[in-house]
Each structure stands twice: as C-alpha cells, then as structure tokens.
Amino acid sequence: MKQLFSQIRTYPLLSNNLAVYALYDQSFIPQSGVDAIGQRFDPQRGNSLEAGAKKNGFNINS
Image (cartoon, helix red, strand yellow):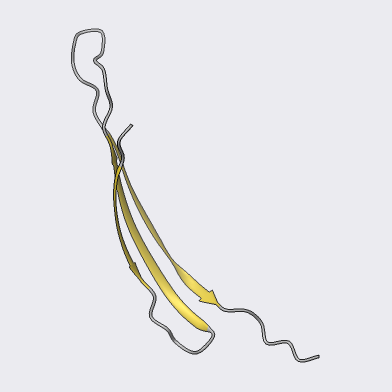
C-alpha cells in the first residue's frame, strides 16, 4: 500500500543543552476497492502537531 507523507520540523537551539522543537505532519493513504454500491472508498488522511523541549543529557559531577 502506497503512503505519502509531508513534514515540517524546526529545532532552534536555546543553549548548549536545550532546544525547543515543533513538528507538523500530514499523511495520505489511498484505499483500494469499492463499497456495496460501487463507490470508491475515501483515502485516509491525518494531521499531527507536536511541540516541546529537548534537553541533551545531564551533567553529573562525581
């Protein structure tokens, strides 16, 4: 089954250990076949939005 995806990402760095990010994603999956009256099935479509912060490791002094 063929799948098509598009994405937009951004990762601006705030410091050496901290960055914020945002992700927007769209998907489209065509469906094969027809229903009982001969009409084609609609494709599956999806949207996703995610945002957050990422921290790289912990500086633990022993």
